Length: 468
Image (cartoon, rainbow, N blue to C red):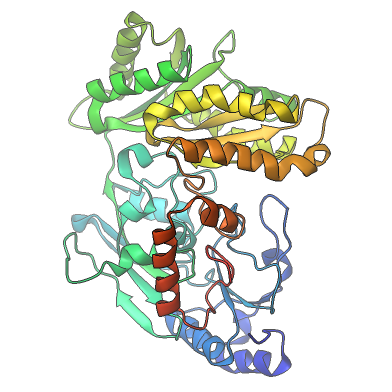
């Protein structure tokens, strides 16, 4: 492959794009965990036609293209650290809400629109776009779809894939697929939308999406409940679903190590339970039809206490208190970053195997010394963030030699239990070897065949998901 830094190729790009499309590369060459440094010439096209023109030029010159959304990805999918210098194609200038169809519960947004902006546009029309995650103030729709992002509301609304009806995509040869369908039913051939979602920019570049929105729930409430164990949390989830059905938006498992890290790092968030429980769940509920969400949570607490599933709890009495509970949950990743993880794991398991994994994993890691474990995540959909930290007073660099072995020990146990080592963050470049190690050979063969068919020159996000 050629080099995007070649003078002739850069001149070609300047002939295609206006001066406003060129960017200082520095802010685009790092990732949130600070472990890699990328490289590339950064351009920000302002339209799908400009994106297509850049990709055509890259295809003709065999220059790699790395799509760039909000830069919030945690597996290195937005960085190319070696090989020929690529074009980093930022979608930040493609940031328009193209249309809203309230009667259809559909919103059409370009891929550079920030998630919080999509949420606000839906809210302005009395609708909810239910995808919600900690980076919603900076993550962009194109990247969220390219990674099939999850977040806290998957239990009720599904991953990003479930919230997308149609896509506009630039293919590896610079053609444009005008697939912005607003249809709920369309079985006319292969589902190319689902193929592109989760492909991490390796099969095509998403430039716009028709998104599914829903009516705003009339009553919302949240509760933080103390439970004796992960098994009790799972039993509480079953009870909650039996009583409240699809009204449960989120069901988050929290170990006390998270609040301990929050206190240790000085972040302004607190647990309104005393004493601090070993395990907690944060339940979020949204109801309509005249039902009161806070009253429903009070009834759930009473039933759970009678069944010995909860030992303490607090139900938010106002939207301010509800926001404070969610601020606590959303502060855990920030505290983790300040402490500095030795190894972080984004895993999913069959629900019934979650308690067994949490019991067995510390024993698997015992040979690496006195490490601290912060286990939290989206229990409702089986997705745990199982992060390993140095003992208090230590530094993650002290355990650098063990990082790979720690990761493999956790991932081997997850795989043995029928889980996934990439639940919601994607594969990127961080987990390419994991995908090869744990995936079914037939699945890998099909993935390689798709890549070869749709990107025969290998220019789209080279080295991400599948090896070169």
